[in-house]
Amino acid sequence: MEKRENVSNDGGASLPSQSCRDSKQRKVTYFYEPSIGGFFYGQSHPMKPHRIRMAHSLIVHYGLHRHMHVSRPFLASADDVRRFHSDDYVQFLSTVSPDLALAAHANHSNYRTLRRFNLGEDCPVFEGLFDFCRVSAGGSIGAAVVLNRGDADIAVNWAGGLHHAKKASASGFCYVNDIVLGILELLKIHKRVLYVDIDVHHGDGVEEAFYTTDRVMTVSFHKYGDFFPGTGHMKDIGVGEGKNYSLNVPLNDGMDDESFRGMFRPIIQKVMEVYQPDAVVLQCGADSLSDDRLGCFNLSVKGHADCVHFLRSFNVPLMLLGGGGYTIRNVARCWCYETAVAVGVELDNKLPYNEYYEYFGPQYVLHYKSSKQDNLNKPEDLDKIRTKLLERLSRLSHAPSAPFQTTPSVADVPEEEEEDMVMDVRPYCRLWNGQDFDSDHEDENDNTKSSNLAAG
Image (cartoon, rainbow, N blue to C red; front, side):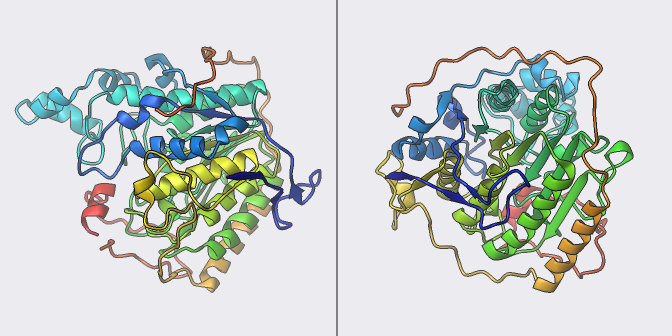
């Protein structure tokens, strides 16, 4: 089912000290909590944590666990979560229950509290909500710890990547921003961290968290227009010390492999040369795949994973996180394949038999055929965006320094024994006109992921 892969970058990924072909094996730590698939947002809700369990099943049946250290994540504490989120929000998340949410219609105070923290249609209150957040955050903090210690070259947490959560509110199916918590842990050891987001939705929560600092550079490739969350235009570049350290790549419907690769590789190559990060976090939201329930891009599994290939080739500590993805059989395919890329193994296209085999019919293959979809990204428009961003990067001060006064204490993450892996119609799209990068300031009350789905 598998064979060792000589990972090729087709001449695009190498820093001066590296060769263009990257066959070096990596030490990979993979975080998985068996209970993650049991959390349930609701029958009609598009977010299904079950997709992580499906991805894990493929990973195990392909035998990828034999090439990684497998670790069960610790449950992040309320104090861990407070390292980014506000005290009152964390207190609310840790105590709210479905019964309280149901009673909110009869209790004006409870209703106002739910509204204050943005819980509702997109972000429902479900059983075990805070435990779900603790698992996701614990995996990303733990991933940062193993990278900080040098115990792993790559750390994987497919339960992470919840990039919309804000300091004091939920947003876009996300409650706790595990990415921010993981990056804060990395910053205890590393001077500069690069965050890259390939989810179809803008990585607004992470960008907002680090908007005023040059110690984290955020780069987001996303659909821009009448689309949740409505942010991420090119003029959003950061402020103060963080000016020019937020980079947004606004894209249109139908983005295919060739077009995406033509944007991602040269931009990230330049970012790596100029910013010289000590660690990289890649949010691998799978809603940028073709045929996603909420997405509008047209990437294949291999096209999506090319981003992992490319960043892996730089030999910089790398954290791989999940994110969006709402056609769950394709999410499982994607994250399984990207796990294989991380460990340097090529997989047979024919799927191994597994407990979710019927989900993958009728072809039962890893690399499904992308749908026929018009690519609304004109080459001349992509050229303008790419040229403008590369020029901006060329003017950036090289590798900002951030000397520590004192070294912060690292998170005390419990040691976990290696796990026994035996199984248990889209909204109107506004076209970028090649000149104006400004957001349109219309009423965004209906700009939710759920309303996008209902419109489709």
